[in-house]
Length: 357
Length: 81
Image (cartoon, rainbow over all chains, first blue to last red; front, side, top):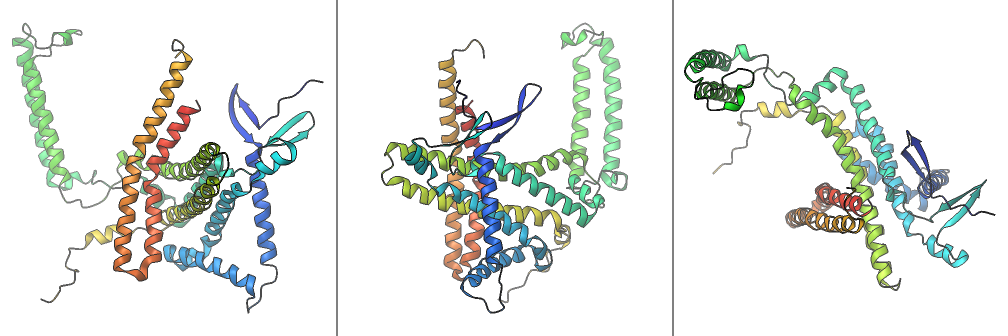
């Protein structure tokens, strides 16, 4: 009988490269958490009364705390719609972070002499490494982040319409096509004309005079004489152009026109906020698990792991679950709600209250 | 990469991981301490707003922590490469 090495995950290959890995522990614990949360929610809300009992009062306390939080950020109209989502994200992430507190590895070790549980499915032996936080795997926060990404962008398109939504990728706007209406355009045109005249003159003179003592002999490859005259004239033209651009950037802009140069920045920013949110959860939980394992191994499981679990497990887990939910809430709010920033800029500063002396 | 011995690569990766974590922890540490200090000032001025201030402080700290988390991720990649 040949021994088969226990598998901790199932890899999906694409062209010989691992594309996805299902970690059995992570998937198993996630399904378990979902089942437990569903069961608890179902049992807890089965018999709701208008005069709450003890359990219902606790439930109402939790829900109303989240309702106040979401309503104060989004307003009651949107908040009513997104409260279930934000509350569920928090409860799910929090429960997943708390799962690591259950010492299943020790229980397995006492019962079977191994820290993992082995399940035989057909010819395969699956290794389930006890109750590890699913958020220790980077794919868990990524899944939540991608979900938040789609929710906020689809909601934003549905709310503002595609034109206004995609217009935001080109902010801050630039008065690009309104240049002919502004003084800077004529300044720029004059500078460009002067530069062109200077450049042509310099090129003519330079090709005649400076053909012999070329400053950059290396540029002569294609027969083009890059002489010092050309260099000076080109510098003057470029300097005039840059000066005009600089002056133009201080002109008051009349009409905003989409700035295509801002598109890559904005597009990357949309992904970066989700990516950083996901990595934050993963890094905190995984880093905490490493620190618990390192320090706990140093003192041979005496007393320190309890305090480590209290800080790294309970405190950091709660804070990070809260932060994840709050960031999802903030990103969705920023994405779906109209910005009134431009109107605030329009004010001429006379609205400030005058303090009587 | 083929010409470098395994041991030297590992040593370099570990040194790099330590440097990444050490230098990457400076900024978030200073920033989070600053946020906590300012939140303390705010709470001492407006004790009735303590809940809101604490919440905002935690969010701000979590956001400013992200550079430290990035360096942690880099350190993990270096160690487990």
